[in-house]
Image (cartoon, rainbow, N blue to C red; front, side):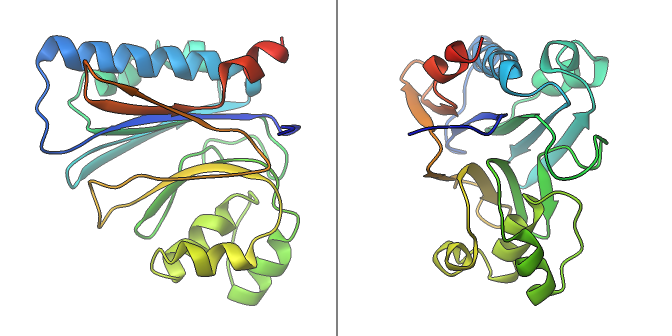
Length: 208
């Protein structure tokens, strides 16, 4: 599949019932940081992460590239936390200004999501549903929240390319992934009993 839209998405999920040792948690976080920096080649305008541990959650984002972002004091502290789920995004701005608020991940009600791609009918969707937004990606997660996470109904209204990930805060053990005309890979790491996802590495290398 051709992926002509720059933005990087990555993350992981470990089932909430699994308790990793401090060493394993450090390894899990280091892999996530490595994937986030690898996705920097797809977007340098902003970087953001969302971490969840059961029902507790934290969001951090900034208008800088990933390799700088992970060195920030607040971000270092977040990566030391025992988060069973992480969403990470590196943005190459298309729709919307380069601001912290316009960086992914977006929290819309109970939905938290990240997106790589372009939504050509974002204005139509926003007008029909009376949404306020700055970035085309936002309408996806607003619509998912409005539809109570009914993704089949939601994607009947959305046009364009996408590789995206989102979580419903009411379902702390679930992670949703979709790829349509944009690539997305998933890998399981048995040592950590954790699933990771990312834009394929060969795609990132080909953009160098």
